[in-house]
Image (cartoon, rainbow, N blue to C red; front, side, top):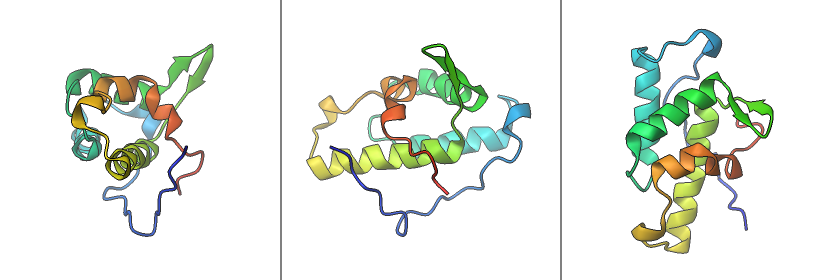
Length: 116
């Protein structure tokens, strides 16, 4: 069952990174983007590993012989969609995926092809 996200009430609070291919993990703007996305995530376990996965998705992560890239905006909407689903279904905190589990691969279940 998928949850439809009403984008008219969800505003992306940060500007999409323009030159993702040349980012630096020490870039303060990129760190700020991760923190804003992390703040929306409903289970705060595994932050360090989640941040590593965040950078991997920006660079391009190999999944089944295919390189998949996600933008910070796609990840923001995916996290928002998952958080809303957990809230609507009344999922208890102990059953919400740890952040590192979600950011590893589960995020792909919530990413929409075009989040513009």
